[in-house]
Length: 428
Ligand code: S3P
Image (cartoon, rainbow, N blue to C red; front, side):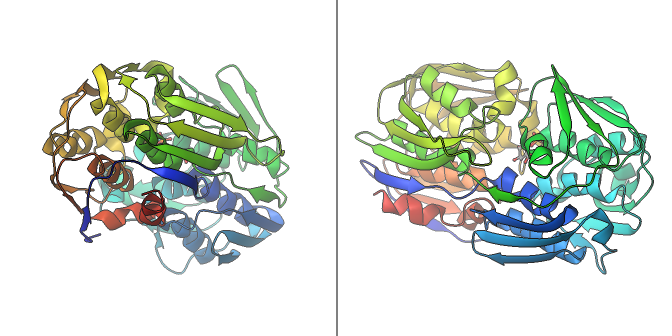
């Protein structure tokens, strides 16, 4: 992650983009296909580094996976078809891969070890290992299982009821994946609803799961069967172009086939609250998850407050919301978002430090940030710090700067959007 890129300002972005497949859904399609019985076909899979890490880990567990760009075919032999890996499973930069795999590996009858890159080594794992241990899992690791490398010795699991202390779809999913292998029933209680791709996929792969209010319930001993998954475009990738279209004068961008799962569309609510000119045309094609086209046109924006139940619906979009706020009139307050500190980087610090270098009026708080706009951004040297979403946000920021911007570690974008710069330049 050491590639420097020089980005010059532009006056307008115009055109059409089909963003790549959703990262969260692509991971889950690989995992569910590998633990189901039969042949799973995945279309519009995201061939980004994170999802390729999931493929490589499941291949090491013996799953037969053929990937050709965005087409993936998985020959699943059920959970019983997975075998002890010969070497440590390497998850790269992917928190979703390691946390969901911990749920799967906890109940399998062999020992395995997992590790990832420098960023993964700093990310908290006890949020997953504590509930899994309550279910009977045997997981050990650095600092009492808090950090990688981790070792899992598969055990017979029992169902539990677990109230999530943090709103996290990764933790919820790990518990559900363990719960499907456990004896009895497993209930996850969510303080705030998080993305529900795992729940949807359990049903698509022939399993059963129920949600009542804030509780999600699965029964143990479930066998899954192969499915055909059509992955919609990633709204978290579309978010960079939604923001660009909203803040770069004279822009008009059409984003095709964007996933519109209501647990992920917080960015649209925020853009609308800020006064952005956005129109959505939902598809009626019965695909795996809701999707549609989104058109964004430049307009004057106002500051807003982003807080509470909205946060999990846009957690990955907060870096680009901070950029939007620098171009909106008045103050924007982002709070209840302390989770940002444990993402790929501490995203409160990286967003505040890097946008400050470009002249933004932005200040960190304990659980978010405060931004005053509208500011004229200036040029300079900034860094993605190995964080894909910071890299993409800074690239959009650079288009507005009065002087050139050098973006260090620009290749970080490949984690979720390998074709990001090509798509961006196609609009100039
Ligand atoms: C993800 C859930 C979110 C999100 C991450 C992907 C998922 O993390 O930030 O990029 O696929 O379940 P948390 O669930 O830990 O908030």
